[in-house]
Image (cartoon, rainbow, N blue to C red; front, side):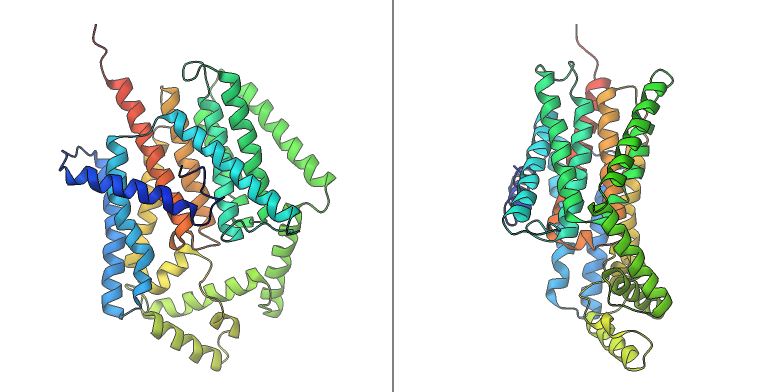
Length: 401
């Protein structure tokens, strides 16, 4: 349900998350014996630490109550994580849900293009977030294709058709959104797939497929001169050039660069816990009046960067748990990329790819401060992790004769 309606129903990510939260609270109310590994605990500590810092900053800075909205979800994610560790979903449900979510996102793209005549699709929330979620849905469908083996499913052709078409559908949504921030993560994701799949036995086949894919993409890029990727690249280079040469902040990227510059100018004054919302706004007004910054910094609601946004309002104390939430799980998944168990390896690829897409997307958007991307990030990370741990447990459990 979480994936199926994630991008096709307003606030769709909230319904599945709410059901998981209620179920997890009921589970914890029974006071189960929690058996967490050191890796599990590291993820829990990162979630708890970010909320603790946010709560401390809220009190010390006297910030508005809405500033605790997103951090509270970090805390609420912990019981869901504990539930999923104990009762991970079947992988068939995971991959089927991802594919259905890809189809529903594709439907939204077609609807907005053909009914409203939009060139860049925004989804039901925001083009950047919609494009980012479509990108990871496509990547997960590809990972699911690797899982669709005779040892896991009966109707292998049906599963492969379902997941292959889902990968294409979600990729279409990502391209239609014009989201540059997610696209640049694809080469890194490709490397992760290679790291998890290539061996001496299949090196030739893997390299052949990689070259064929590169040729196909290059041919499409050249044959379709007005494709969204080329248009996005040209807009980006023009914005950056105008900003650095003429200090022109009218472009979307140029405005973000000026907002980032404002953060780095003001960060050294309050590096540990950052600025309060009220004080930071007053400081920007002073700097704009003194012509130290361009006026656009007063109109941009956020810095369009997860890391600079955290630095300006929570300082280093807030940035550390955010980075830990990416780095620790990424390393834990990376350790399984060469696992002897194929299902573990596939889930490790899915996990590292998920963290890579969101980590890179965070350079151009505040993905963990927006409800839809925040919930998608948490639920997918936790589901993939829980499924991988279950696969490891099945391998290590001795068979009774």
